[in-house]
Length: 535
Image 1 (cartoon, rainbow, N blue to C red):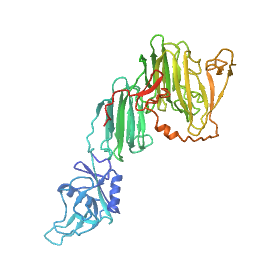
Image 2: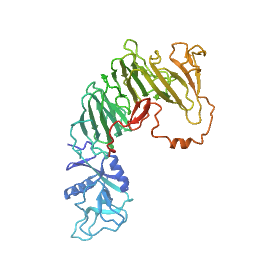
Image 3: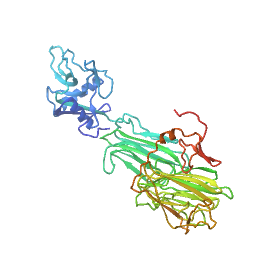
Image 4: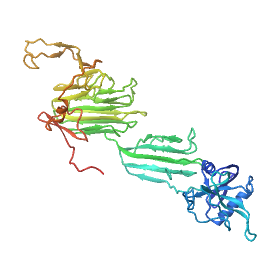
């Protein structure tokens, strides 16, 4: 074995570098050694002391009388004792056999030629204390082989953390190790790097951490200084490979991993009366290359009502129907398809940000099909939806629009025909001190006295003249109307506990509560028994 660098000398499993020029202070010498992935030398035996003394005297730039810095300094303000900066214990000491040490504040340890004041005692290179700002040569030291034994291993489970050896301290040189990560069946592994600090090279050829996918042999390699980075495997297996060369270290890496269940992938049939649907890994981020089909099956004679309350596939967010920061660049390979009738083409919602009720669907028969498709470079959080089996749709929908937002209200199943046997009440809520303006299109007022009184005797109503499912145009004008209510605060405080919720769509209940309806009254209830807080 050798030290790779011809200027370094091997002794007892360590590499040493002796430098007498240019001279530097103790602090600068320490920085120079650390820049070479070494440290100012410690000394732990008489043999090591003799080797260092011999190395100093044989170096080409040795100068008699010069001090050569070692890696120790006095502890504390009173200088109670020496401590090695590499953390090793102070045992052996190489002081001269006579008292030649001055009391110095801020003293650092070096080796210097000392002439004996007594003929019977030898002269030579001995330990000595000097002010740390004094300039001199220095002796650097490092281990030849890694200090931390690293073995290839296999990790199984549902989540964990992987780190480079000695993280957040400096990793060792000349490392090559693999970690095989295995999750449960029907899952995909998701890795999120919290921190990467490795030697940089544009092609990551020197030091790097690499994640490999055994299924398709694709891999991603990281080096340099990187913040958060994400990587997703195609299956429940992945390989992490870490490599470091012979010099230039960093603090390494830390990566968390977890196994994500693939609910609905590739296919699933649901027969529950009601429930919640989420994209895999929601609400963290969408997984790439998904192709999942979910069939919701209602009892004979009933239908399925679906409300997609949150949608984010990378080109904007639709929160309870309201678009937020939607762009014109809509990916063709990432979408949701809703099929209300298996005999007709599916509906692809959230393509038109002007439709504010684009996430409501009612199947025409007992089955509703949902398909989730994502591409290789998909972004976004995913989606959240609620479903329920019904005979007759009788629901209220609350739409909270922000200041300056406008759009259209459409019947469920837009742009296809509105469902039969359905009554959907949409309540528009604007911010405080704002008003709403409604404009009706493609409608006609039914004349009174013709026998049609769906809104009550004597009350007129608006009838849609066409089969166009769009029925209402909604805008919020720039004019602000501010009307104070002196009883507003008291009304809020005195709301009865028996007060019904306005609507269960979208679900208004907090902490995973369930919104239930009984005799026309909607209310929140816990999804399970209260068992105290998780600690």
